[in-house]
Length: 317
Image 1 (spheres, rainbow, N blue to C red):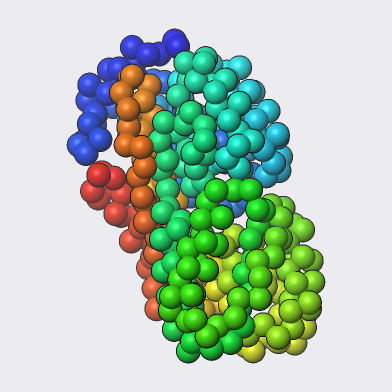
Image 2 (cartoon, rainbow, N blue to C red):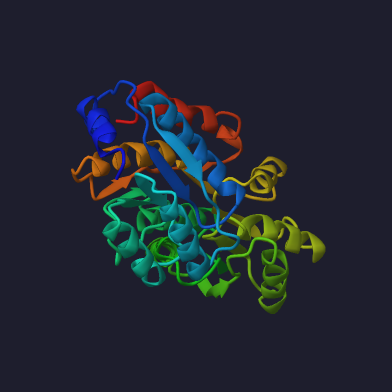
């Protein structure tokens, strides 16, 4: 690739746990699952690290969360001859060919947020989703006092990260609240615009639910809206993943008990660092767990600054 030497110079000033100086320009492209606002802090971190290390960065969004569409975006990205790609995988098997094509072209791919373990991606930067789901269940079990009926929402059934969260949550509920009945896992799809109608239908079909937990970002605010329409606000415990504005407002108003917030800014920042290592012909850590924060009313006003300062203050070590 045109800037192997430039990236090599960047690596000369960089080790995974140390500081780095500005480097000659290379180009890294971030490809999220979709244009969801969830990915904004991911790209904020990507941009901030790019500025620090002298890397040009771009973001290319698929029109929808679909493996075939995301594969087409990868091909378009490769036409620009980037030096590396950071990918949030829509699913695992469906992206094997596209990642292989990038690797064959000499463009390393790392995954962030959502892994593609069957592919040739050299690293995963993101949440340990199995552990996060398990810890979320611990909190939910406590709020439910070990009794009741819970509905689990998942936005698409092919994504590795969502499947891991659901499995971890199921395992945690079985461990911490064996008396709670899991009513099922409802697929609300990967389209945030379509999620509210699907969630409302699921709430009507399972009107005996005393709690709802969503492993996907769109499910929590959609649940708040659905319960409001059905006159059940405050009668059902609600929690889930990610800090969409509507979810945070739900916490502020008391309609949502907590949300599991992934360290998305850190994901973006460390994606640049991993690509710097990979494009210089060395292997970054296979997996980097960026951790999560549980957000309630108590830390609602402070958690964002605390997460960002963790990265910028410590240099994302």
